Length: 257
Image (cartoon, rainbow, N blue to C red; front, top):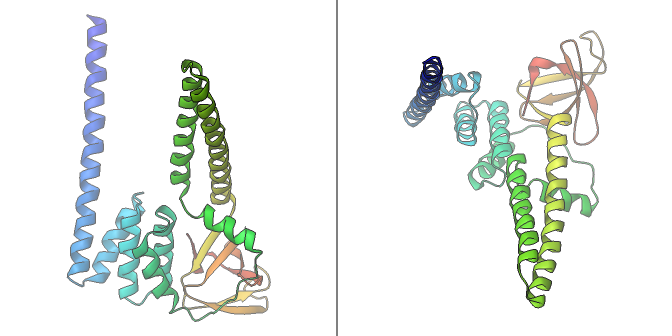
């Protein structure tokens, strides 16, 4: 009787939990659709407010960030538009619509910073690395892992020497691909944890030599510029431009991608 009571309690709690998740998902979907309706009606500020409520509640997704970027772009807030296009691209690398709109938004950036030249092998490496998100590389690595396990199993069950040789070669190739995918995944995750990028969201920002409002100006940047975030002291963030320039800005002037 006692065990039956415990099972019923567990069942009830499970149903309540699943119901809560279902209601939460339905609520987020309804809010997202409401934001879309505001956007279609050209009420862009209301659309931004609705989408931002989802972001603040912890919801994230390429479609949400993409639509939010579009809404900010329509209101002329280029910095925030680029910020959310970059967030969307991070979740969905290579998406044509996101890449296209991000390119259009980047044309409005005042600062034209030339990147330091890179060796062509590094360019290839970066291209391969950005082909998938960290979730994508996780899936790719897992697929090759399963294929490797399958190849090992087939090798011991197949008795034909020729087929065993083919399976062995396939297994070696699969092992190489699995290791390559695992390395790419590790590098991708390491960058996400250690290397932070941000977008300037204020119209004009005076970059300081040191984290102090009284220090001299090093240079000026404008909204939409993408920078590397290297350090933080109190309410100041150290930024590095693509051309190697460094300086400090208030943390409210830049948002992390």
